[in-house]
Amino acid sequence: MHRTFLFSKIHHCTLTETNLEYVGSISIDQTLLDAAGIVPYEQVQVVNMNNGERLVTYAIPAPADSGAVELNGAAARLGTRGDRVIIMTYAQLTSEEIEGFEPRVVLVDQENRVIEDAPVVNASTPELCLT
Image (cartoon, rainbow, N blue to C red; front, side, top):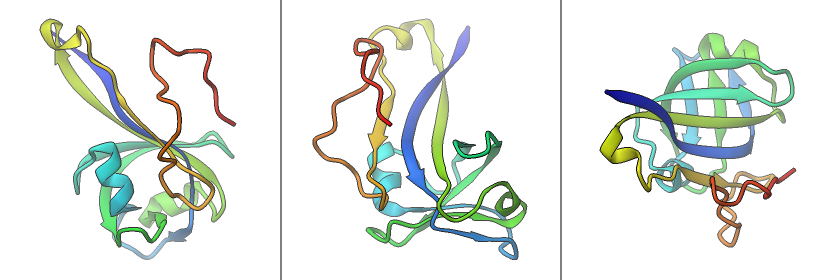
């Protein structure tokens, strides 16, 4: 049996742009994709902290170190520049894979740069909550 778990999360990104006329997806700075272990065209869930919208789309790379996080196509209607979002991926794990598994959590600053010395937030540190 497989169960679905959070695999990775980029926490508190800031939307830098929306582009209604683009074919679709979310563009994410390649540095953030690498840090979270997200590969191009992988399915992602995006949660908008400003308006509560949730959507499922796929990730495409934006230039590394650009700080870009851009909603494209119809998804552009679900956020505005400056909104804070959480980007998540999930994985199907077997019972054997579950033991010891911890999702990869990437914390970013207001310019979508990885916070290198951020505390690791996982099941063993639930008291850590960033605002």
